[in-house]
Length: 138
Length: 138
Length: 138
Image (cartoon, rainbow over all chains, first blue to last red; front, side, top):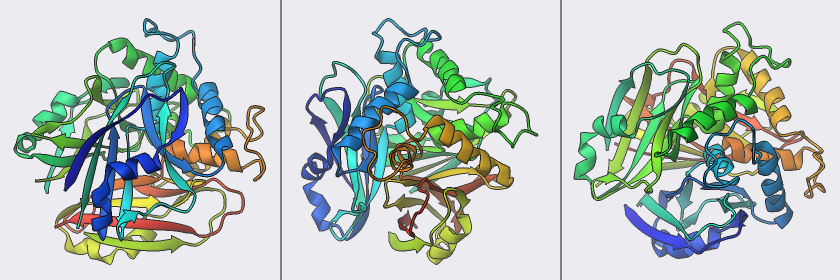
């Protein structure tokens, strides 16, 4: 079992492909024949998901679609002191989730051809984000 | 690998912080230097997520926001015999998910400062909920 | 650690119970006393979730509800060249997720009485879908 903590520098609000940054943080992956990577984000207003790695328009539409699904300034919000983007950020984070798990096969992440890892940044002005990656394998 | 099954007593409909109850059900956590906790809820109308552990207003807004996102009595529902809260409960359970996985580091859950575990109770009159916790680590 | 890749034949758009197909792909499950199954789908327009295994009307209502939550032809979509069902399929896939993890106890998946595994097919005309199942246990 290998565990590494790392940070990713601040990103603008939106959906960002980070597959390469994750792989670079985990050089030991290449030594495993079979395993699972558990990637965890230690925040409640950013999240992780897996989706299309090719056409950037998918990530643009993720941002507009999640903004439509979870609007700012809904009249029923009571948690409003941290800004209009804060409560929607918490909701989006739980809809997408704090972690992803990916199989490892023959020294690499066994993603489908079109799959990539997204860092979903839900805040307008976020700092760097912290991650814990735990790999179990052999 | 350690596995424990436990129950949490009935909760009212809404979002409830259960981090302490989970930790108390798993005294072996303190002995692990590195690992992953997989926590699974054995129900289809309650779910698990990780979100803000401090201000209770976040949990209040989760309840009203998920009620808005997944309304009761939608005209297209056909599964209506178990009450107006039942079909929305199934949908909310899948939007949030039946399990969470959390890294373990130096004998404790390696959550971010503001992260806690939520039991999301989607039924009006639920009984106790059953969980299976599986810890892999060393 | 056991890992198997397998395919499931094309399904119509909608939500399909595949618990039995998954168990049949993993005959080694019966030999484990404790473990976790990680099931991963290698696609970005289909997904996995756990929900009610009994009344088929739940799966019918999942389809109509996700179609309502994530509509086709939203005016803000820019990723439209692959058909009106494509961008909604990506969004639904991330709302539900690319993988599920299920505890293994005494040689079987330790699901609740009413829980089953759903293959969520979000495309109108999909091909077979590819999965990677990784079991860690003892």
